[in-house]
Length: 315
Ligand code: TUI
Image 1 (tube, rainbow, N blue to C red):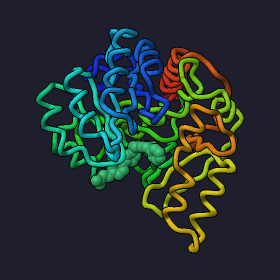
Image 2: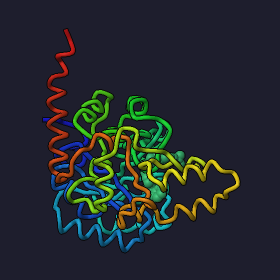
Image 3: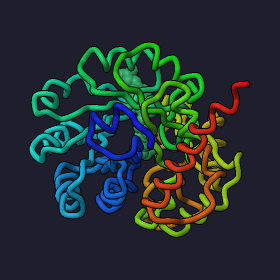
Image 4: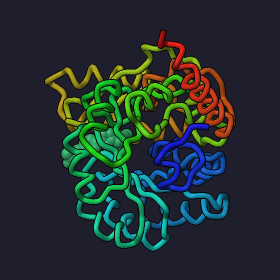
């Protein structure tokens, strides 16, 4: 059986977090992952406090196991969501796309475990200093907003920089990735893309089919012009976005208007042309739709068998 400090720290069976994905990680997916022994996370995305409160309450009716809320710090509602997670006494908060320092004191006083997502060793050190219980170090193989470093380079450097446990994210979609993360010094993994095809995941069937038919080179990073790079599947939308970014005669405002609402179009409407289908580089590895429990159990059993056999490498 895989053993990890993260399981003891949070009270979960397997050291697997489900990433907080905007429009996607709702109470249904989060509770399914937590019920299966991982840590499910509800994405607060750009939603207001009442939406987040409702999802937390729904999740509590669906699982008695620990679950968390992911707060996207660039959300206009981050401040009010930061209060709701205290009022609703969530077990774990993860944060993304920014610095959670100003909320830390209140969260820690409420006894919440805070696990910021980081993309560099320097930021991980800062998060440890202000009281984070662990960090998720996310390489740019991930879907959505990406940093600069890839997972292979990032994880060992973050592991060396801090004493708190590190979870690896970005490009991890099966037991091989999980075993490799342990070899790099991680205490667990966070996965997003592989849960997009979970039976319990609310995304449109178009989104799931696109992930299942994706190849290894199916993703593209756009948004660098705005200092907000985002990885998604190559689609008519993302290719046009990339072309517009390169064109100096097109203003930032025009591009932003073109991109508005595109994630919702992918998740809710299944709009293959106008949608932004955020996904990581691991999409090409995902071949079937299954329950979250099957995704987790096959990842863990494959990782265990690989780690058991690792000794065969030594003569
Ligand atoms: O946050 C993510 N991934 C996301 S957020 C998101 S929301 C969105 N974005 C575009 C269009 C529509 C919706 C989509 N994907 N991952 C966690 C993550 N955080 N990765 C990297 C970081 C990060 C980057 C810089 C964390 C901190 C940081 O710097 C903090 C600082 O102040 O230096």
